[in-house]
Amino acid sequence: MKNGLTRACNGPSACGVRPLTRRVVRQPVARSRIHRLGSSVSLLVLALLFSFTPGGPFDPAGCPSAGPPDQNAGLLTIEQGALGNVWFWQGDFMPAEPSGCIRPVVRELRIHHLTTEDQAVRHGDSFSFYEAVHSPLITRVTSNARGFFEVELPPGRYSLFAVEGGLLYANGFGDDGIWPFTVRAGEVTELQFDIDYLATS
Image 1 (cartoon, rainbow, N blue to C red):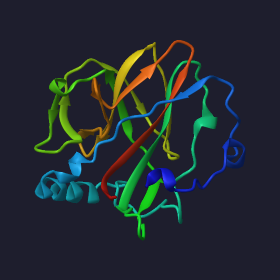
Image 2 (spheres, rainbow, N blue to C red):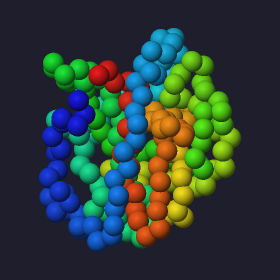
Image 3 (cartoon, rainbow, N blue to C red):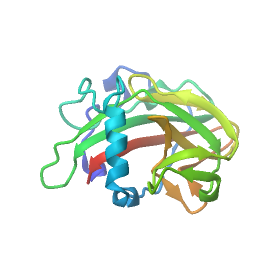
Image 4 (cartoon, rainbow, N blue to C red):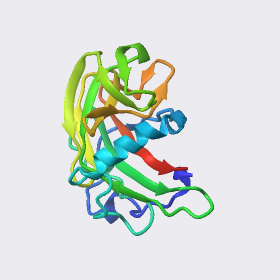
């Protein structure tokens, strides 16, 4: 469904940003929709909490008229580490008549050593919200108004979380951990971090 959407910007030059000059590797992340089967009460409480957060998910400003936001890979300045986009998905994305909104958002991101399920404390019966993560915290980075972030990292395996309403959010899962990604020597790994607990698909 998401892969079928047309980008609003057709390449870095169309977005007014310089082309890439470094080796960038796109990192696929296994996605899970299991969290949509979690407690409706928990989701309602979270929605009410975020609805009163300035600039939070219920802020209608900045929603594009159609399609996802522009990609930001052309803003790359680092030689090794990770870059990516943080997008908030809200509304109906069912294939018949999708009417949801996708917009870039400012979020604090926390990068931990690769984190397994037994190193994280889930929030209630949610499959994407966590109250605590007990693996070593490597660094923090904040996406900008375009949803763009980049961070220098040594080679290794990591997990990515976003701070959302006082909790930690990650909806991607791999065989060896929560929202895993890899950084290799001399490469920049490109990530797409979607916050989509208020979207239906």
